[in-house]
Structure formats: structure tokens, C-alpha cells
Image (cartoon, rainbow, N blue to C red; front, side, top):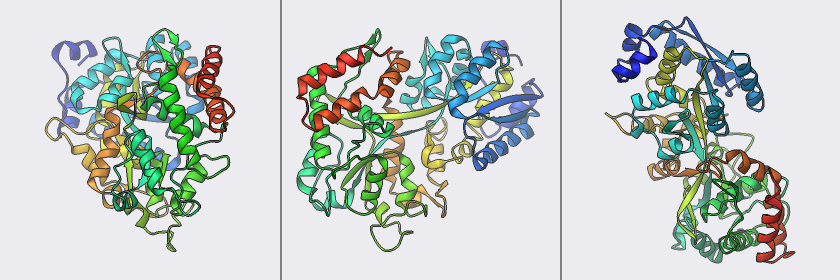
Length: 453
């Protein structure tokens, strides 16, 4: 069945019999090539196992080719120029729109896969981030959202609301900050660390502040930006002195000396004592899940000028290329997102939240399956056994509203350059240290960011 016939006759309906349908009806290449940035040996083995299942079902082999993420852009550009792109590329968000615009990706094929699987089964935020013309540049695969990690037991003891807003965070600091035994927060303050850039983007997004619009650079709104600066100064003042980044925030939280931090979900298995290289030290047992049981998380976080808030998200996609054997590539992506989806997520469950929640028949099928997948390094356990269902729902739900600077505006490239310039980091640190006032800080950021291109 050709690609054009598929478009005119309708999409394959995926179910438990997907493999049989593809085997009986699809005329496919003998082998397709799949580039993946998941190049660690254990993760490659899992992807190869899924490729083997696909071959058994369809007769089409999949050559799994590891590509270092930092090399992905140059390798794809060179392969495109040579007419030698692979059939499918697993890629990060920043390539979705530029590659579609350049002709590297077949957005029509991606849209057909999403329609066949059911657009309503995907997290809206993951689809929105790759929106292209009237469709989607690539098929969302997995993702994660940054989290406010907090001591829920202490919040409950003091009758504090969860830290879902600037105001709630500040109220909690007022009640809980008692250094050196307990710091209210551990904010990122080390200017040359990407961790500070990532945390600040989350905090700016939460208050609806962005340095880009549809036309490119957009001067930061002074009033809303000063709200961000004041909030960040407050959480920095509730932190230990020094140059702080991910290392200190994790260590202090693990020692029971921090009420709140901002971190990625890769902390979830460590919190539960499953990784010897980063053990909780809140008690004498480095393998204890005690700290995990006392922890809550927030993904969507709101400032005073943005009541809806925002979640900072990182999404990964399957891109079907314009050099692909389109039918075979589409069938492989559909398989990896349906019958093989749990195995896709199992590559690294703590950092691969399901962007496809389930099927039309069982809307929560993949979320439930993901929560039962083992996480950890030195010990293993499913997230669903370590954390309450409400936390699992919060973890996955952040992808519904996930955002990044420049995505909706088609300016992700410029936004990335702005972040990498570390201008915002430097000026925010100057404000924290009392070297500039609010209006001067906003003016300095705008003047410097206007030069980024």
C-alpha cells in the first residue's frame, strides 16, 4: 500500500493486531535506517530489541545507528545535502521546526502518523511545540518537565499550600527558612552554569516573560521582569551563600537541609536511594526511600503576571525524513508509539515521560504502564511504588502545558542564543548582589540581548 494510497484511503487503525495489519498490507523496504541520540549501550540494546520485534511483525529490518547529540545537526545537514538521510531520526525539540522548514523532515508523514494514532492521545504541549503550518513537524515521543521539588511533609505540618506560585513559595520561605539547619530554597546562582540558565527560563516563563516574539528579539516588559527579579532575589537570599548550581541543591535537599529546590526528574530515582553515586543522607541508610516519601513536586508554576503559569519542558521527537521509504518509516514510528511504546519509554523511564497517554480504548494505558517501569541504577523499583498516584499525575501532567522560549513564536534558534549568551544570568546575579536596581537591570538585559543574533 503506497503512501498516497494511505492518505486517500485513510489511516491504519492501530490496536493489538497492528503487527498483523502491517505485515499483511504494507509493502516495505528490506531495511530502514534509524538515527538515535540514545547511544548508551543499555539503551541501544533496548532500541535494538524493539527494532527486532518490528522486523518480526513486518519483515522490515531497522538499522539502529547511534549519533552523538552534539553532532546531530551537522550530520543531518551533510546527509541532506548528499541525499542520504536516514529514514527516521530521534531528535530534540530544537531541530523540529528548522528541519521541517529546510526540507529535511516530511511533516505530512508525521501528521498522518499522529492522526492514525489519535491526536487526542498526545499531550497538547508536546504537539504544540512542534506545530508546523497546518500540522506537526515531527511525532512527539517522550519528554520531561522541570520540577519544584519540596518537602511536602514540612509543608503539611505548617499548613502551607504547595509551591505552585511565587506567593506560595515566598510564604513557605517565611515559615520554613531556618539556616543553617534548613534553608528555605537553594537557588541557582552560578552564572556560568547552564543550570542557572535553565532555572531562570522556567521562572521567567512562569511569569509570562519572554525575550522573543514573532519578529525576533522583544524587549523584556519592565514591570513583569522586575517581579521575576524580586522573586529570584528572595529565593537566592533564602539559599546558602556561594556559587550554587545543581550539585549543591541536590546535596542540601538530600541532607534534609533544604525545603525547596528546582530540578529535573532525573532526581526521582536518586531521592529513593536507588543510585549509590548520589545517595540521600537525610538518615543513616543511603538506600532508604524515606526522603522520596516526604517529597512533593510541582511542574506548572505561576507568577503574579501569569495566573496560568508554565511548565518548562524538554520534548524528543521521531522525525520522518524526506529521503525516507515513507511507508516503512511511518509504520516503524507507529509501532514504536503503540505496540512498542512501553519499550520505548523503558529506555530511561525517569526522564522519558509518556507524551502519548494511552489509546482511544484505554486513555491512560501508557501512563499506567510507564509508572510500573523500573527506574534506578544500583537498585531498581517502579516509580508507582515509590511515589503516590497524585505525584505520578503531576509528573506526566506537566507535558500538557510545557513551554519554551521561542517555540510558539518560531524563534527557538534566537531564544537558544539568548540563553547561551548568559546575559540574563549575569544581570540577575548583579541584581541579587545589589549592584543594580530593577529598572537598571531590565535596561541592561534589553540592551545586551538586542545585540544577540
